[in-house]
Image (cartoon, rainbow, N blue to C red; front, side, top):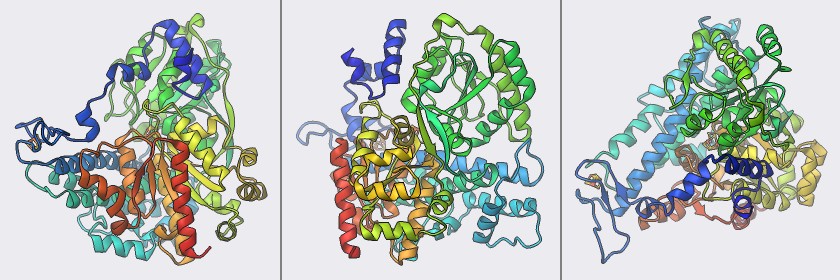
Length: 623
Ligand code: NFS
Ligand code: SF4
C-alpha cells in the first residue's frame, strides 16, 4: 500500500514490510511513528543532564521559559557540550574497533591467536616503514609485533603526534597545530571531551567545538585508520570482486547465517568456520544444501570487500532479515545492532547470538568470542546455526527475490592498480574536466528519511554531473542494491565520467568499505593533495551523509570537515538551538579548517551544493 511505498525505495523492503504487517510485527518504522512528535528540546540540542541539579532545558522562546540551565549554562554551551559528547561516543566506537585489531595483530605476531595469520606482507612492510620499524631480514611476525605495539601505543599516548596524521599534507598539519587540534593520544582526546563537558569545566562553545574536532581527527586519522590498515594486514587488502546485494541473497535451501555488526575479527572467523567440511556435512545431513553466510551493515562491507560474501542489506533492513523466517542465526558483535532484534527473533526460529563482552542484548544467546581461540569458538557458533536449521518453520519463510550484482573492493591500492599504478590518469581526468571532482558519500539509514532515497538520489545526481563517487557504510549498500556498483552503471553517468569509467572498467560509484574505511578516502585525498602540492581543502572534493543517525557519523562529519572537505548532512543535527554552534559549524569552520558543514535534506539540492563547492575549488586551482 501507499504507506509502505513511502518508507523506502527498495522493493525488497516493501515486500517485507507488507509481510510484517500481515504477521502483526513491529519494526523500526512503526516505533519511529509512535515516537512522533520527537522531543523539540532534544531536536534543538538544548537539553542537559550533565549534572543532577538538572535535567535542564532551554526554552526556544526568549520571552517564555528558562534561558539558562540551573548552573547558568546557555543554549550555546549546552548544545556544544552535547555535540562533542556525540563525537566522543563515535570516536570511541571507531577507535575501540581499531584497538581490537591492534590486539589481534599482537596476539597473531606472538603466536597466541587462535587462527589468524598475517595475510598482506606488503602492507605490513609499508606500515612498518611508516612507523620507522626495521624490516630487513626480519620475520613477518617480528615486524608485526613491533607494529602492533607501536599502533597500540597510539591509543594511550600522552603526547602526539599520531603517526597516521602525518599522511596529511604538511599545510593541513600546520593548520591543525596552529588551531591546537593536532591530536595527542586517541584515548586522551576522548577523555578530555568527557572532562570538559562535566559541569563547570569548559563553558566556551568555540573552545568546546575545537576539542570535538581534535578528538574527531584522532578518530579519522587515528583509530579508524588503524582499524582499516591492520584489518588489511590480517585479512588482506581488498581488490575488486563481484558479489550481490539485498535480502534475496538469503537461500531457502541453505543454512543462512547473517554476520551483523562491525569487526572483521569475528566475521572472518565465521567465514572460515562455515567452510569447515564437518560443519558443511552436518548442514547437508540436516537437509540443507550448504551453509550460506551473508553480511549486514559494516561487517557485511568488510566481508564483501575481501571475499565477495553477499550483502543482505543495510541498517534499516536488519529486522526485515529476521522476518524472512529464513535466518538460522544472526551473529552480532558491536555497533548498529538494534536491541529490537531479540523480541523479533522470538517470533521465529532465528537464533540471535551475541559474541562481544562489550555488547549483550535482550533475547540473545551469548557465545563469547575470544581471539585466542577464535576458530574453535567460531565453529561452535556456526555449529549452533546449523543445528538450528532443523527448527525452521517452512510456512514462515518468505524471502524476497530481489538481489543485485555489484563490483566492490576499491581500496586505495585497488584504485591505484585500476589506474595503472599511479594517480596520474585520475589527476589528468580531473584536470581535463572529464571527472569534475570526487564525492565521498557515506553513512547510515534513518527513518526520518525515505530509506535509501537520500543515498541513491544524491549519488545519481552526482554521477550524472560527472562527479566520481566513493562510498562506504550503509550508503555503499544502498548503491550496491540499485546497481550503481556495476561497470555498466557508467551509462547513468555524465559523458566525461562515463568515458573514464569505461576506459578503466570501473563503476562510477566505488565501494571503499566499511565506515572505518572512510580513512581510505582520507588517505586517497591526502595522496592527491600531496601529488598536486596543495592542501586537501583545495581539492575539488566534497562529502555527504544523506541519512546519518549514529554518533559515529557525527565524529566522521567532524573529521571530514577538519580534513578540509565540505560536507552536507541530510538529517538535521541537534544544534539549531544554538546560534553560535550553528554559525561555527556552517561558517566559521572555514577559517579554522578550510571547510564547513551544510544541512540539506533534499538529495538533489544537496548534490547541487556539493557540485557548487567542487566548481569553486576547480576555479581556484585554475582548472
Ligand atoms: Ni556506519 Fe556501519 Fe550503517 Fe551508520 Fe551503522 S552500519 S559504521 S554507523 S548505520 S553507516
Ligand atoms: Fe543543568 Fe547545568 Fe547541570 Fe546541565 S550542567 S543539568 S545545564 S545545571
